[in-house]
Length: 367
Image (cartoon, rainbow, N blue to C red):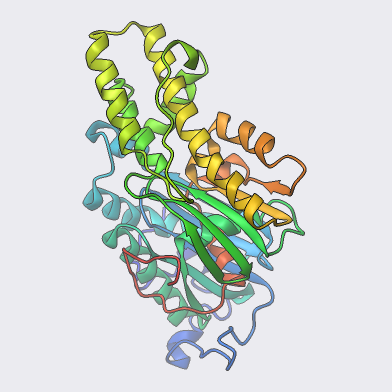
C-alpha cells in the first residue's frame, strides 16, 4: 500500500514514469485558455471525490466512458455513531486516498502522461473532507503538470446520468435527491443550471435517515428503509403527503407525523414497522415526483434526469418511469453511480468548464 501526504502524492508504482516529475521542473501548473477551458481537453480526466463519506478516484475518457471508478465507503467506520463524524471521515480520506489513486490508475491502464485534466470536488460537503481531495489534486497538478479544475458536487450528480446513455445532452430537467439536497433544476447547456424548486427544510435523504432512526433501523437509513418497505403495505398505516404551492418541498411535517404515529402505537411489531416504512417511502416519493410532473408539464423537455443517492430507491425508480411516461426520455444513473463517486466528478469537470479548486463547504448550484 502506498502511503503519501496528499500534497505530494506520487504513487510509488508510477514515480519513475516519464513526465511524473515534470511539474517540479516546470514550476506552476499550466494555465487555461482564454475561453476558460483547459488548453488540452481531449483524452483522460482524473476525478477525485472526498466530499463526505466516500473516498473515490476515477479515470474517465472524453467525459463519457468510465475507465476506472474506485470507491471506498466509510459506512462501517461511522455506523456505531449513527452518522458521519467529520473528523474521522477526513482522516480516513487522508489515509486511503493515495492507495485508491494508485488502484484507479492501474485499473484504467493509465500513466500521468496520459491524463489531460484533473477534476476534484470543491463543494458542497464537509470542509475537512473537501480539503483532503483538493489538496491532493493541487499536488498532482503541480507534480505532473496537468490542468486542474474544481467541480461542484451537485453538478456531478447530473453528470452521473451522462455516463449511462452516450447521447444524453442538455437541455434537460433534473431532479437531484440526496442526503442534503432535494432540488429541481433546468440545465439549458453544459455548466448552466437554474434551480426551479428546492426543499424548505429537510432533504429527502435526510428525512429517510431520520425516519430510519425512529424505526430503529440504524445507519445508513435510506437503504434500510428501502429494504424494510418492500415487506410493508402503506395502506395499513397511511401518512400525510407533503404538498406545498409551487415546486418547493417540505418533509418536516411528514417526520413529525411518523413520530406521533409511533407514540400512539407504543411498541409496534415488525409488520407494523414495515408498513410505516412503506407509508413514509410512498409519501416522500410521491411528493418528489408530483413536483417533477408539474415542472415537466409547465415546460416540456425531451430529457429528464433523476439522480443523487436517493435515486437508488426502488420505489422512486419505478414510479419515476411511470410519471414521466412517454413525455420525455428518463435517465437514472446505474445504482453504483447514484451515490458519491469520482466518475461523475470527472465528467462534470470535463464538460463544466474551469473553476478554482478551492474548498467551499456551502457551495450552491451557481458556484
